[in-house]
Length: 392
Image (tube, rainbow, N blue to C red; front, side):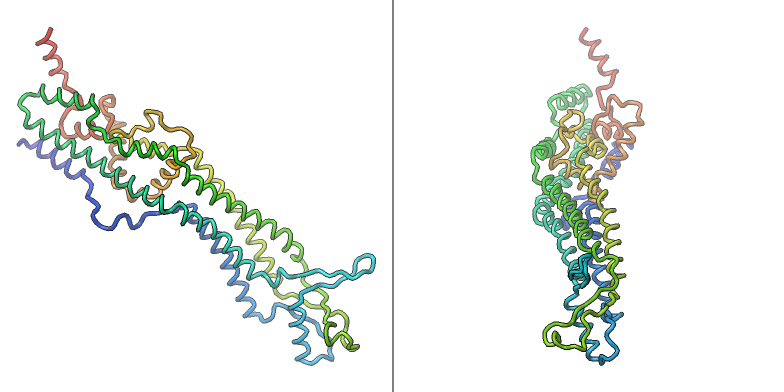
């Protein structure tokens, strides 16, 4: 065996990917990076604000302070604070002199509304987790495995071709068989390509993804309505007039009709309102960007895997409307690119393919590795010319 053939065998052996015999892709990401960021912010931020509201209440004391008459005892003043916080109703007179009551309940409901907000924003995550992730996980496991296997099959095919070339005494027979195999498409493994083509006609994953992001936009709009309708109405009101002449105190003449109270928790309400409005406004463009990614194909990923036999979705112009399950799978393949061991090898081969001087002879990884192993990707010219001379 010549030194060149030995070096070619070593090179091809090093190009083979190791078999996955351990746990199957434990680090598989079933959420896109931007979706994960949106989830953490949309759910985690109201929980953070809720903890801030409770911390302020425990550290600063009661969220309300009423100015009771000077003749009230400490217990009576505490009763006034508790009663006014329980009712949280502002009494005022309109232009006609009629009494009007205005509820200030957003102050009392602030921590619980933040908890409800976190739960609501987590619903789209649950939808994706239970409606899409099981099917997506099985699709990714199969596709990643088949992409790596297809690459390995191509390398083993070149190894087999090299062995046949070494054993063949007549080079004409070898090249005739090789050209016949290429003509009959023996080198192609169409299972994966047909599977991906079927995914173009499926829309369950893309429908769930669209529904998830649409719900996020809908709930964000509901947050705007809630803040504008309820928080804006009490945003600047720090003091209010409270009436405690109810029940047993309704006939007491020494109890004033209205008592002025001050909301010490107003700053927390203002911080929560402004920060929530800012954060969720910043999330809207990210959610819209996630939706717009479904309107275009990741052709760079496809072009790299075009070097695999029978993976010519681009060259055959098989890609139609991008709003289908195949596009969603391609987005998650890009997010799990570290699990694709063949991607780095094919990326290098694509760069070398673009810089080689024999671009017209190289279409797949089989052709390129054949060239690197010391074989011509097509029948040498001197053999072709000899056949023509023998058969004028």
